[in-house]
Structures are given as C-alpha cells and as structure tokens.
Image 1 (spheres, helix red, strand yellow):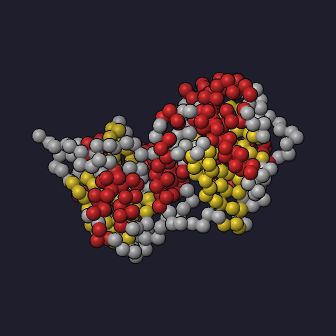
Image 2 (spheres, one colour; image 1 turned 180 degrees about the vertical axis):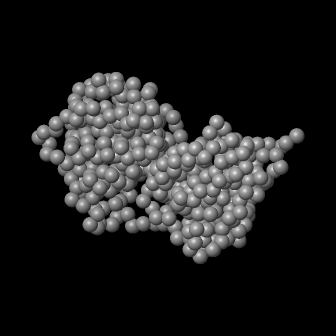
Image 3 (spheres, rainbow, N blue to C red; image 1 turned 60 degrees about the vertical axis):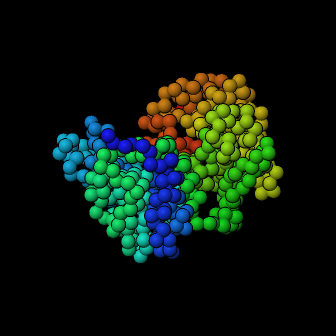
Length: 445
C-alpha cells in the first residue's frame, strides 16, 4: 500500500524545510528564483532563510488538447520552449494542436509576466548561483524551462530545488547542475497529496511576495515624475497601508478600493494605476482591511465598513497640504466597487467612479443617491456580474455607462482585456477629473 500521508503542512513549511538542505548556498552569490504561481511561496521562505534576493521565472505549461492533465511542454517568459516528445505519441498531438496551444499560452504568459513583475527589472544572474524553486515536480517540463532560462541569463550554476518530485520528472530535467529534493517516492499521485494545506495561489499573492522581497527603495523621492510614497492611514483604530503616487503637476487623484484582500499589491490595480499615472492622474492604492480582517469573509462583504474606510482615506487626502483641493475619483474592484459607490453617494465632492468587474449592486439603495459619473466595466464572459451591473446602472440617478469587454472573464485574465480596462478607466477619469468641471458630455455605451 502506498503511503500518501502529507509530508508538509503547507508551502511555507515546505520552503523552510527545503532551505535546510540548501544551507551551504548562504552567500552573496545566490539568487532564489520561484516558478509562479505555486513555487513563489516556497521560494520566498528559501530566500528568507538563505538571506538571498528573490525573483520569479514566469513559465506556462503547454496543455494537451483533449487531455487536461497532460503537459506536452512549457514556455518561458524569455521565449524558451521545451517539449516533451513522449506525450506527442501517447496523446496523438498534431502540429496544429501545438501551434494553437503555444499561441494561446504565449499571450497569457506575456500578460502574467507584466502583472507579476509590475515594472521591476529581472535580477542580474550573471556569474551567480541560481536556485530554481517550485512546490513540486511532476513531468519536469516547467522546471527544465526555468533552469534553461536561468542558464541563458548568465547563471554560473543552476540548482533546482523542489520539496517533492516524481522520479520520471527528475530524469527529464537536464539543465540543472544539481537537483535537491526532499522526497521522490516511487508511487507519485501528484503534488497535492504531499501537502496538508494546498490552496490555490493567486497572482495577487505572488505579486505581494515579490514586492515585499524587492530591494528597499526610497519611495518618498520628488523628481520630474512626481512623488511616490508608502503611507499609513488611520481609520477605526486600524492602520490602513497604501501607496500614493502623484505625477508632477497633477491636481487629481484616484483612490483604488478592493475589498477582497489584494489592495495595494493587486497587479491588476497596479497596471491600471500605471496607465492613469501616464495620463497625469495621481493614484492611491489602498488596503481597506487589515491582514486579520482580510481572513474574515464577513469583513470582505461588509460594505458599510469598507465605505467608511474609503471615506477616511478621502478625508486624509483632503487634509494633506499637497493634495488638498484635488479632484478625487474612485476605482473599485470586487466588493470595493460597492463600497466606492456607497461612499460616493454621501460625498458630493467625489468626481467620478469606475468599477472593474465589481459588485456595484452591493451599494443597494445608496445607488439612487450617486450623482457623479459612473463607468461600470464588465467582461462578456462574466454573465452573473454583468446582469447585476445592468441592474445597478438602472438604479444610479446620475450619468452611468456600462462597458462590456469582449472575451473577458471575471478577472480579465485574457490577453489584452486588462489593457482595455485601463484605457477605458483612463479616458473616463481624464474626462471627469482633468477637464473643466462645467461640462461633461455623457459617454454612452
């Protein structure tokens, strides 16, 4: 009988235990490279234990048509592609299948790379030891791509480190100088059974880990590009953390409201914020909940609580000498959209609201009191939220437009869809925040 008892409590536990086997690499020449998404929490613990910098090697598997669990290869963010010839024969993969899957995954890979890196340059690997980390290894194709990428980037030595691995997958990896694993059982039912707690890892969580591990930057610098500052706002006795960016010469700022715990670290919100900044609009990326509150599903959907926090951030902006008198808008996502509309309904000073796939309906009866221009953006492949936003638009007293992004699902993960959201938000805020207040011609969708 095969023993499938969990070896690790969770990914963090696996990372700490893996780091013990890598202790001889604790030196200035080591760089830890996680394979997103699941490998980053493991890699973060390894990097912390080794005192090494952390970066990502973004990889996408090439799935086999008609065989969802198969992997006929993998793609790397630098264009590297590795194929698994054995799968082609077993799964009857055609050249057309390969071309189609590669094209689709390359688009997804490009978008994910932008979101996760958030403008950060890759760490320099030249002449260094690259420790490539994932949470487990099955076929070995993703690990082989990651190790190949590290080698191509100039790493002098490449070490692959995984908590648990299939023996067949280990044999597939040829680009690593050394492989470190804590378990390689003969019977391998997949990675998940070896963890007691193995939740799905999100892009937001990965972005937060990479951001926290990034080299310290002076965020309070005044330059030709304006100011960038990490801030703390007090509300209800809670410290809310945010990041304020004020482009040079701006007189407008958009506060980002997200109620599901991803706040200022959300790569989607940060992409939109970067587009607004290019248009000369300030941004405040904000955590509306404390880390403890984020774990409470009731708090995530507590619209009065979230809207009160948003109002506190708004008053904080009005009290600052450098932002007093600024025109203020809200960008809401998830339950943050309902909170933004709720807060705007009682504040005539809010100039505009944009919702990205948000639960505008959660503002309830307060929608009738919203007077500022509102843009609701929803993906065409998000039918339930689309229906709720249509109803919400009908309840808003002031100008309200609904923009449906073709081919987009709830999280706008499809290639080009989030870019479309950013452009729509930029145009809406440019019209409502940057142009004279006297006239706003409605934009109808």
